[in-house]
Amino acid sequence: MKRACLIVPVLIAAVLFAIITQSHAAEYKGRIVDADTGEPIEGVVVLIGWRSTLLHSSYREIYDVKEILSDKDGEFKISDHKVNLNPLRTIDEPPELTIFKGGYQNVIGFWDYKYFKKLGFPIDGSKVTFKLKTADRNERLQILREGLLVWPDEYEPLLSKEVNKERKSLGIIR
Image 1 (cartoon, rainbow, N blue to C red):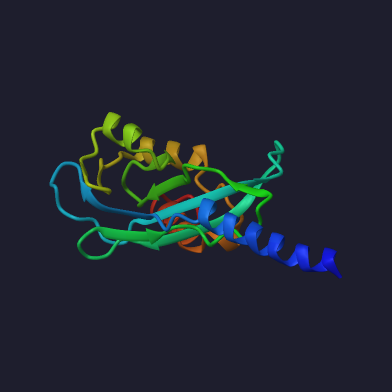
Image 2 (image 1 turned 135 degrees about the vertical axis):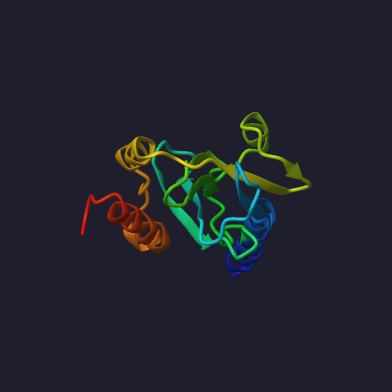
């Protein structure tokens, strides 16, 4: 009986520890503009994905993926990953990032402010302004060859749809 009474508080403490240490309620927000005109770009796919490891193993698995389209002002906001209640699971940080719009150069990497500054993207607080350059036909074909779809289809329906629109506009598919 005493052992059972001890297990419950330990489990509650483990869950609370996991919530406190793994859930930081970050927001990933920004604005996407045309690099030449400074005008906002609507309908840009922004995808942020997190992978996790269990018991600090080397095997990484998908934890959470969120995608959104930029609005008419080129703005987007994605909330942090779902809450991790497993104290044995570690969520990889920073999350992976893909920004894509047909006809433009894309951004692929990690959500990393130092990297964004290096690329010349202005940062105001936690909001990044992504300046997308237009891409010529060869650059657009190269982007598609490099492969943008790195998550299973069910995680990136908006990105899959935009990539297929780009393939159609380039005459790759009908």
